[in-house]
Length: 233
Image 1 (cartoon, rainbow, N blue to C red):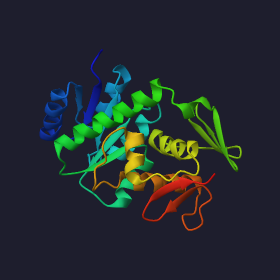
Image 2 (cartoon, one colour; image 1 turned 45 degrees about the vertical axis):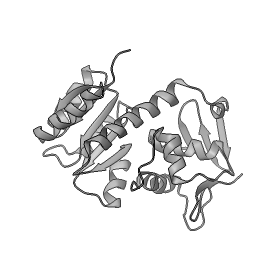
Image 3 (cartoon, rainbow, N blue to C red; image 1 turned 45 degrees about the horizontal axis):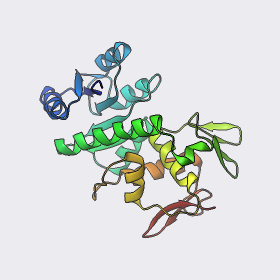
Image 4 (cartoon, helix red, strand yellow; image 1 turned 90 degrees about the horizontal axis):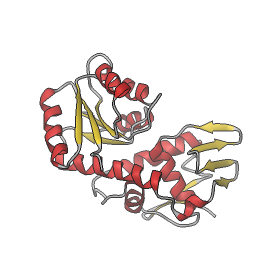
């Protein structure tokens, strides 16, 4: 089996090379780009399985680069940023990112997240789970097409990232069941949960925004305080 290819985009040469060493030690093929323009050129001629993308770059920053990547590609994108506030994470995920790490980061955590995101794509793309046998899931005015990865509110399509879709599908396929943050992470990312990580919470918040689901009086995703999230039967 061919090695998975990871594109690392960062204007800091030392960080690029450090990430390359760790990923190569985990048997990934690594391609390096110093900025957004070079990354887009590489993607035109190279099959890439995941992108590690710095946000704070001169010229075309990571947010703009991500949005341009998303015009033609669906591979997971992990953002790197010196900013760690929730709003910065929300902006990154809104631009089309799947995961977010704050600098300085532990290289071992980055490699773990790379592995988790690639594994998640492989599992959901190649293995049909029991819930996938249902082509569409309908919740009131919301329609989830499992085969095409599309979500519609009445006749209007709601554009979700792959991660947002996977979380929604998980909850919608198991209506009435409460999923903790840890369990959502285990199921969607296919990896062990990082105790200090708030990635799931940020994704849920963004998903609710796109569904226009008021967290105070939610129609779809309900918070069970101290336990987790669910969609009612």
